[in-house]
Image (cartoon, rainbow, N blue to C red):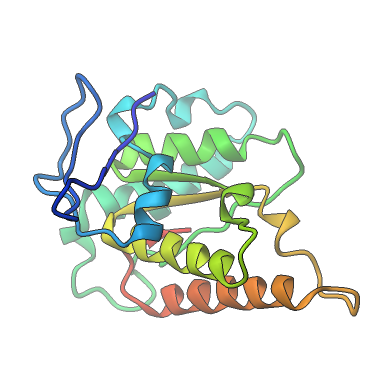
Length: 196
């Protein structure tokens, strides 16, 4: 599996180094903040993904709906230009379900078939021991997805982070949840580019 990689050079500028043997549609890498560069290891080139939506078994109706909602608009954006609000591509798709139901395989298949970059972020990647750094990593996750648009943003085990609120939560947990939700809803108001 190949990944995008943006190491910092001696001048502090970021540069793009594609995986060996993988050609990409990005001619020049976007300028990345330090937190975005930290997360860039989770970005996967869609051409390097082996799975497609045809590999998903038992979810034929869902797969067909996702092809219509996500793959078609990303492959043929001109067909949706100037369309009414009802005919536009969605700004995001939320996959949910019990563990082992194929959400990861569906996200990988969506990225492969639509040609969108895949950001496969583990919630543990967003945790940091320093106060405020987790919030910055959450913000960087969404800003990097916008820079890579079109992008499939897959947050594995996000339910561990976004459980229902309780009175026993720490200030840090509440702050990270608020940061996540504000960026998620902000993205829902933007033009469709990154899918979460």
